[in-house]
Length: 124
Image 1 (cartoon, rainbow, N blue to C red):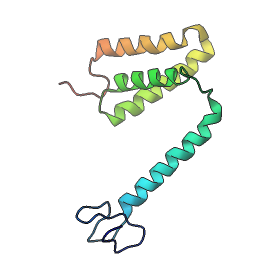
Image 2 (cartoon, rainbow, N blue to C red; image 1 turned 135 degrees about the vertical axis):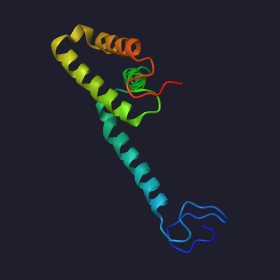
Image 3 (cartoon, helix red, strand yellow; image 1 turned 90 degrees about the vertical axis):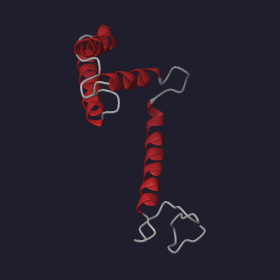
Image 4 (cartoon, rainbow, N blue to C red; image 1 turned 60 degrees about the horizontal axis):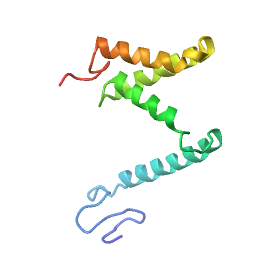
């Protein structure tokens, strides 16, 4: 904590995480809170899944499908893609359990045929 005028701030000699003029430790506090929130979320989610090599395969596949459907680099698209995939997965599991994952890929293929850049992606 070289050059720290405020206790708890992480400041380097020339460039730091805190605003020097205002004395605000907002960036540091947000970083610490985000790290804490991620650790608590991971700790609470541990009992819900069995740990194995293939335990996170479905999560990675769903994340890939959400990113492709929403459009790469689009936060609105990721939100809408996650909402669509979640609803499709829930209704697919309830009404057609044998084709649950198949419905996800059919939707992804249909959206890519309609808009190759995704729902909110920009054409490059």
